[in-house]
Image (tube, rainbow, N blue to C red):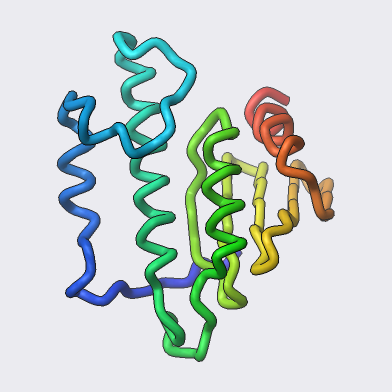
Length: 157
């Protein structure tokens, strides 16, 4: 899959302070984002929490992209797509890679070797799934509650 690059207006918030923040064990800086259901004293859990904090921050930055963010006239992320993406992110067991989609949507993706899983959150808030595993492909609209099972299946099948 092709990955688009995009730019954020330099006057807007930069991601580097967020990356620095991830390594601080300051609970107050993390209160804004949903807590994960993992023990906080576990080092691995702390890393997982950091991945989700960064993912929420990426969504926040993507939601601030303006019209023509890619130089090809693309629409900004729709409110419905951003809201669904935030809700979806709170339900996933592992943080995805996150990309903007030119039609006003947002893409979550996972990739390991010959396995690929993608959730495209359309501009109307619907979730389109694309999965490829050893040449077997699936593509369909799914409900929010189904996403967690797809991610678990991706990692454990």
